[in-house]
Length: 81
Image (tube, rainbow, N blue to C red; front, top):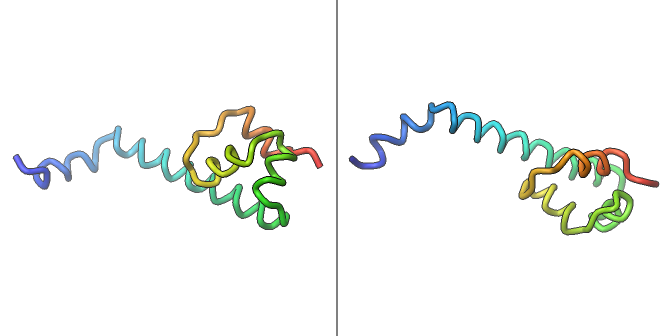
């Protein structure tokens, strides 16, 4: 069976839909963090310092490369001034 015959069936599976929804959520969160950081005029390093993170962690969040934990979300939402 060629993949073109089974691919449409996979597109509609609950597992695939859930994975795509998770990816869309991660991308939306990444965009929100990026846009807010830019609106505040902060570099990734500055945000990282304020939030007690590394610049690499901020980069991974903004790139949707990492699933943020609740403590990380809390630090991003309420960075020290």
